[in-house]
Length: 236
Length: 313
Image (cartoon, rainbow over all chains, first blue to last red; front, side, top):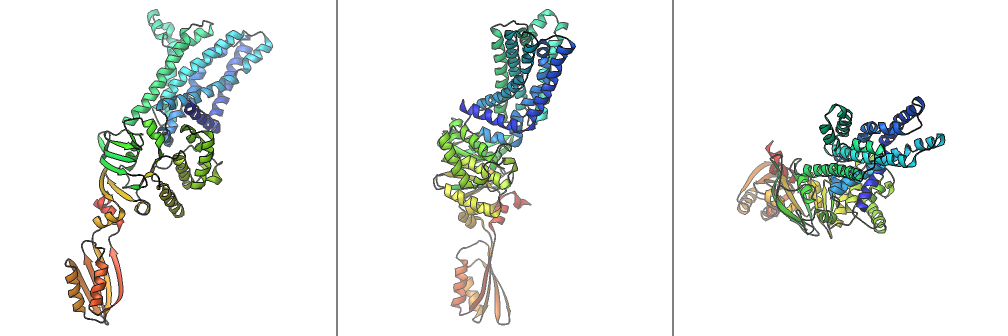
């Protein structure tokens, strides 16, 4: 566990030393602030529903940016050879990388805590609902971050990793948007694997025991795929 | 400590390393020498567990390559080519990260960091980002990182790359000092570096071993023609000629005479360490006076060129 934390700390340290995380955080807050403000001032609704409703689209643009360098950059710069010859399994490397991305996600979500606090000044806020929404946002981010990490394991080019991560998330976003056009049987079976569907249920206050299991399983599947990809490259 | 047995590695059906066998004992430095693309780095990557061999096996620091590779990596120090490191981190953070990945206790880690920084001459750049350092310093940081956990085996891919001549001498001295209780495998395409710093040399070309031995063994085994130029005056030149032909039967001698001095060009096809002595004795025995004597011998560089692809050009 210490090695995983050491790796995550190293990545975190590198991310705060580079402008990427600041650019992403500033852009995220700008867009998120606009979404939140439009709900509040244009819609006249003192609630977080608009912001959390848009969050899958925000993750679509910002999560690939946070995860794109994680493995691609290590391989491009040759530091992956250093990492892979340290006494740590590639599985732990992937988990460390995932943790580092999730810390950045957490930072973004922490910055948005200003929204519920400012709403609390204007009106009463349902703390339970806010907590459920933030938990959902974090679980959705973990599912998407694992996909983006998998995308980063496929290439040595961070831009390509961004595009692949974007396309993977876009697939689920489009699936969610197109669900109304599908037959109910197809819709049910496809939505069974769509993390956005589970997230939206959480936003509606429907918390089921299988939801965290789904998000966890989804994350594990893509982290395993990223690990498999790293191992596979050694044999090529 | 390192025992490679018929290591072979294919990349897309192309053999990059083929049937390579060698061993390195504790206290020994083995140099892998070969032109670019000879398979040196691939060999090293296999020995560190980074790349699995397509066939063959190896035991490194008591661990088989197909065994517990995490434990294997704990026992070795590896410096990849160009010493890749995290440019955004400062030297101390980079070393601390490497130490933490080796699960070194904090006290021990700080102690070793100071020791390695001193040994590799990076103590005054410890708090500077690696990206701001020169290539030579980055190389030293890589070296400090790979020795941090005091491994039994050191595998270093072109450790002197990017170093200036003074730094190269320091690096050689350091490697020699480390070799007292470690097995060290280094690679290089610079003959002088290997000649000066290694106990034995393995010359590779196109993935295969073409020669192995000490520098002296390789020199005597592969050095070709040797030429000695001798100038003599006085004495009986014919006696010198007959004496030389008697001592060295396979000799070709060309004599140019003028102004009381005879210039001999003595050429043998296979280098012989005792040739100088024989020539000197023949001249002295004939009663002549030797005024000049110099050698021209095929260099190790040309031997290397002849053994590897360079000789085909």
